[in-house]
Image (cartoon, rainbow, N blue to C red):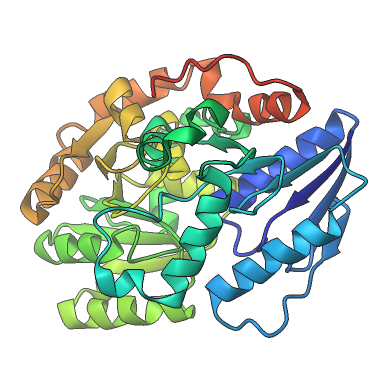
Length: 375
């Protein structure tokens, strides 16, 4: 088949960008003719890519709408499948990595902003009544919210299994000698508990909550992975770190991949993931199967895997800072070894690595199979 895939941005490479690239590569591996459309340069990707300049749209929401229009126009004919990774009217399949925008708890002032109106309009073009777009999501929690708001979308939905990479399954790195060496290389002192935070969006992923907890726990230090220290989103993070006086216990690791990323997972004692919004949370699963205990909020789509594996603590809503700090303390100390063993055992489940193959099956299918997703 000839397949067109549209994704507004390829960088920074977060969860949705990673899903897009891996699915495109897998489709090519199956013999399909794939063309990727993006407003970013392809860089070193080995996927045929067409850059779609989005002019005259400085605001991100306006740029997203303009890109959706351009992708739909440029991929209007000659393709067997048109696939988007953000809401785009008229495509065949949408892979949605975001949470529901059109929520009842959104205040009136926010509803009146151009950003909110634009993003909700794009969302409704795919989920609303009359749309024929088939929709694939990444967690039951995520998609249940869409079904409640857009009931007519129910029969067009599928939920993918997790998309973990097999090469991320490296629990042997937590062996005593290897782990001790890695901890020294990251400046973790003997007797310290190392917390790990992973993300590109500090507010949404709750980094401020982690920093406040760290200020109270003098025997711990924090490794920040993903967010670059020079990024504009890090400005408030630096200010909070200075305000709390914890500069000597926070280290920015930058954006890590491959062995470096796996090494950080092995060196840390607990993943702190107190997100305010999280459709799925790949970092949660990567930590679990690596033997790294997890403390996450119950709004995270993949919090269910923390509960199923018994490899961490899920915090109920509303968020309580003291409960979070206590959970980090015991997960990184008394319960660490037990949580670690449970997570490594959970990683033996082959379904955790099947999501990309299932996504390709759905793209190839003329009709989607009957829904068995618990919605």
